[in-house]
Length: 244
Image (cartoon, rainbow, N blue to C red; front, side, top):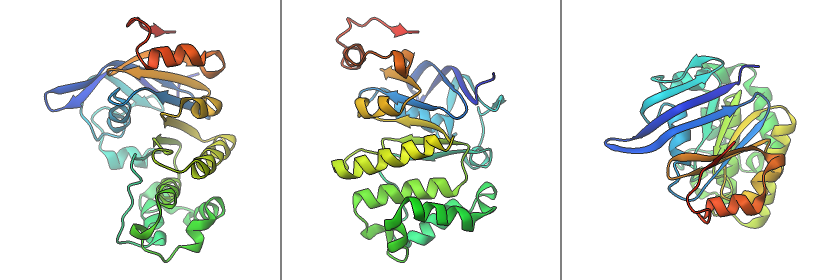
């Protein structure tokens, strides 16, 4: 079976500074792929490169077997891949409803937008309660829910999610991961970047560990030893790679 999303030998960075070094990634349809790693490992840069926000200097990226390299971000969204960025980026001077409707702006998101809006409201009841409120007045947890809801309004086939639990209270983190589990159960293909390794592993089908811009571990989630993963995460492995 051809992977839904495949990355091979990817190099990318910012200007003269290279961040990713020959990164490989395979994402199967309907599966949840989790990417963990310390700060500065290149995880966010990888997602941004997939979305055409960062220039890929070498390697290949394909979605449905067709290249992503050199593609415009808006075209990539139309092809079915959507990113929910780190930092709960919403439009603060727009209402909750208007933020959600921005997700329905691409052609891929316009069909049946009313049905998807009701699904988002069912998934995030607080968004329905606050639909007329300015997004800039929301709490951090509510803003994260809004960012996720806006991404779902785009009708994604592949959902890239960058650090959804960052800086949130434990009760909100529980709610976010419950929603992610529901989305997985619905068959949505998810690529999740997350520093909470234990929570992420419970959700994952496959796990990648990145460090210093490289993929140093690739394993089915069921085979991952958490202690060994943490040794690699914190560079307690003597610097050896563990890809397999």
